[in-house]
Image 1 (tube, rainbow, N blue to C red):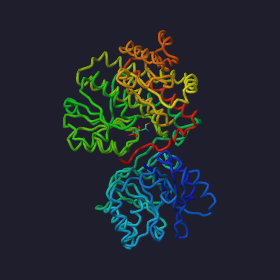
Image 2 (tube, rainbow, N blue to C red):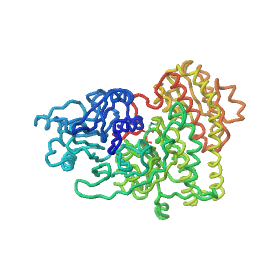
Image 3 (tube, rainbow, N blue to C red):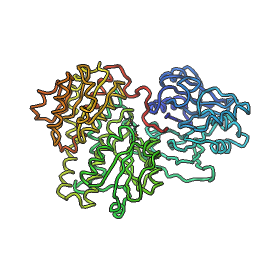
Length: 609
Ligand code: AGP
């Protein structure tokens, strides 16, 4: 997916566009471009590579413009190149367009347009849109956009400039996010909120099917069938500083260290000051809905799928509700057995993951109640759900998700003990003791973060390994999966998470002195079994890095390196265990010279299928 940013107002649009694109670079960063209008002419600058490369091109141009569109790309159709970078122009160079999404019927549209004499400059799906607008521009810009959109199949968030309407930007969305920022005699459009917090806290979130005309003083929203649509303005509390790095080398490291605050903010948003009652502000589940829940399906992608696995353990353990976890893309294309007695929980940091959005739509078709656990206010997944529980992690910019995971697990813990109480399957005493254990977690996370230097030294020892295994049992297994994903996605080392007991059913063949094996060996019901797995690895010359509980005297005799974690309730241990795994992946990636915040081939939110 990609990042779109637009400006119209009284200031120099070029510098504002570049600044906005830098905030969106985590959404895609293989090429970028801007289109501006001055003297009734469209000026286009594009480059392969980072925004900084584009910035060096535009800074040499001395031109004043007060309106423009910018785009940073994550290639879907057409390799990263200057020709394929957005914005794209029509044949006459009078119309410029940026797009985030996928046009599924672009090949047939392109054939028809070429037959009419249109000349294409790129291999992208996007370019068909600007030529379709060109086809109809004689009907005026708004109508030309409406007519073009009618022909499209797939997803889009677009911004359009027309040199004969030099004071307005047209935007439209279907299946990809688009927000409008309201300023003082200036307005902004963006793929998401962090790019705009510096300029405006007044946000309008467009819905699927919306089209809008944006000038410096007015926003008019309409659709293919309605001449006027009212969308509420939202006041965003994020401050610009919180969206910056605050002195850390990378967003990922900043966000790892923000976890104590992110977790406590999330808990306090749900648990009242007495620390005795849970109140979900936007759950929208009535007592009857809760008593009707016979089964839960948790659905998500990536890191959010790992927190869903922990949620499954919690729901069955505390609320005794049969639960299962589904990859969103698998769920939405199967014939899932889901009905009005099924609660579907969709988990997403960004709230824009296309497959998770599709899974929700599929679940609702079958009559299920859907709630989402999400970190972005009023995002597409939130708006598609019957209810939502927000993680209060603040903007997560690093592509590798960190604080979203730990706050999602905290929310799932609270939801499970809440449902356990509501369904009389968890005693008041156990409910209160679980709550107090959760309130201790942020401080314990601080304690784990204090061992960062030791973890960096361990990263030094293993940063040249090209493979790794991560093993855990119970809630430690999803944490092992999450640790492996972190290492994979930011250091490009092949790492696999496995249930520790599964080792002897195949993966143990991989063990030798070149294979670091991270083992989550925390105090609990499964500790002795995990020690057995460590022995199996040692017997084959493997190199074990163990996560253990403070006070464990045995482990130092079994593992080459040990990272001790504070004692906590076994069910909450995954939140603590994932912190050293995040740091281990971070430091290995740094030592391997990888771009931690913008790993190759990845993007922060996958808004395409
Ligand atoms: C996590 O580090 C990855 N960046 C990725 O797996 C991510 O978790 C996944 O794309 C889901 O994103 P979401 O939580 O925003 O839906």
